[in-house]
Image: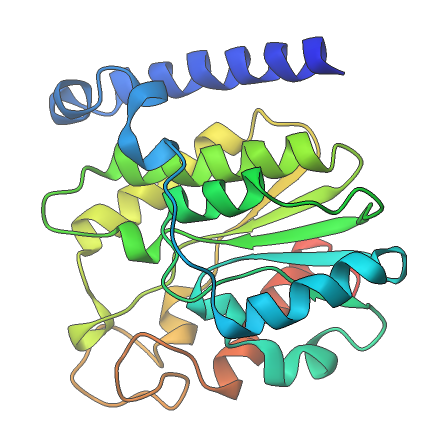
Length: 244
């Protein structure tokens, strides 16, 4: 199993280097070696209170769960509607608000759930890595690293990796980073067995094209979701093949 995972990581690294080299000079200059990009390295961050409370119960009853969610606040705040979204699935929500890809890697590194063997894992991470000085390939390298870590933890699970959704002013925060990062993630994950990249419909999430008009799918901060967005995300996952 370790040899298989090592070979998989090598293939992904070579594939990602090929993607970056073909993406234009700026990618090659900013990310000469995606494997060394800081976004793909674990970084410690305290967990949320919900996570701290939930983890012991998850560990004690891990055999009853067959679906895991990994991500940041966009996933952690899904909790009130989890049963509506996945009516037939016992869901383990392992997301923590504020997590970057680095923080998610740290949390997965320390996860102690030896009896947990999910059939499916949903990953939504990367929005907290967006920034004016962040290269798209750096964001993508972090997302791919998280998915790779999930694959190593649960080799029998099918992984559904969701695209980074729109956010911010006019629901168009750093689109020059977010959109190409999603494209790079999609291209890289296409080579990973048992992984489905689910590109969410940006315009459906933000109620149309980028605009100053408020969208009911989002909270007033233009970052976090209301129930309507989670219903859409659930439909995107179902269309990608996830059993609800």
